[in-house]
Image (cartoon, rainbow, N blue to C red; front, side, top):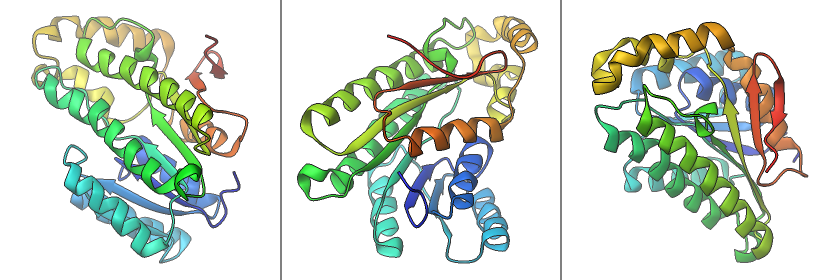
Amino acid sequence: MILKNSVGLVTGGSQGLGKAFAEALLKKEAKVVMCDINHAQGAATKTEFDQRYGPGQSAFIACDVTSLSQLKDVFSKTLQQFGRLDVLCNNAGINNENSWEKTISVNLVALIQASYLALDHMRCDHGGKGGSIVNIASMSGFLPAAHAPVYTASKHGVLGFTRSLAEASRLGNYGIRINALCPSFVNTAILDTVNHEENLGKFYQFKDTVKNLMYAFGVLEPSVIAEGFVQLVEDDSLNGAVMKITTTKGVHFEKY
């Protein structure tokens, strides 16, 4: 896919990985819509991008991704403002074992809802022009994590959904490539959740275990993950791929 003049939508796009993904698209001269529940941070990021890339290249829409009506509104406004949608990055995610139902709602249910909304707009067999969906999973999608069972389950679910929907797209000639991105530990706010009992709940006792893993495996910067994201979007040969990014191996793919 040639990203210049394309339109991308990034959920959870106001900070951290989402902001890095949005900026990576802007650097490729794409237009970007960021949606996020954090109004203040979203507005600040929009102002920053306006100054750096020019007004009209990006938009921010406040949205709670767990609300289907709000998600639908984001897609509608994206099409109203930019006239098309080519890339969806399902990035919104939380880590809260105390509110585990919300973790599933944000990390998996909302991702599925957004993917289906994107299919409605992009499917070639329904009159669309095709496109690319990148679902942000995690190395937790492969490994057990004592401190975060539900977060881990959600990321396993993301991988299963991504690979299955990619196969449906291939068999149904949707013209949409669906891939997953699985980074190791990344320097974002979500890492700090391991320090708070209100996030880990009954699994707070295992916080030192995950801290030791961070020390052993290292922590990546969002810009490195954004490079992998761009590769998944631009490489037309990738569908159903599961990209891993770690400090030791860099970008590599899971072989099933």
